[in-house]
Image 1 (cartoon, rainbow over the protein chains, first blue to last red):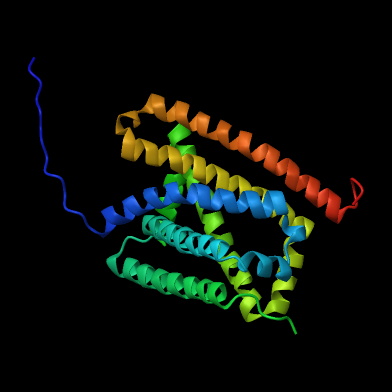
Image 2: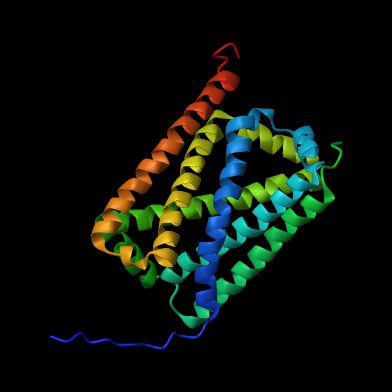
Length: 127
Length: 139
């Protein structure tokens, strides 16, 4: 019996295929970023040692601010796209999906901006 | 609303064993982590927008209830990471592994690696709760 080989053209890139790749490549990056963050803040330092002075000390170093910026950008984008994928399992109508996508874009931009402003502004003096 | 019911009953009723359970656990841990991440970005931003509120949030995180939540959060982050690595490795590097036998064994390995990483971390976090909140170990 001869083997039948069927070739198919590679489909062109679209938003979904880019999002699919983003989830995997950002995932590789988030392993050191998130696990490093959890190991340092939750296990080594611990929440009982964290306060405003600790954050101020940490953010005095530009390296940690860049680390936290990368964490904010990649982790939150990965999370919001994940919510979108789960949401599209439940919402099938084109109108519902449009609403979901716009709501998530607004959510994503707002929360990222809040975190980004705080990262640039730094620790304020408590009253 | 019917699509909610259809999707949820599909999630619950599908009998895909290991692959099905890891799919569900990946989603639950991912959604849980995304929920916490949203709250965490907001409370961390209070160091700039409302420093007094930040101290209040930290006091809340130090409570025993949130300490227990933190232990489950760390499980979620570890499982989602190990399982995500498995999925990305299969998808991008070895798609020939996407078959039932490999899915079953790799899912079991994923859980084992997660537990090996999680148990010592959980032990340290339980120690911290007992030390700081219950005055044990000379706290």
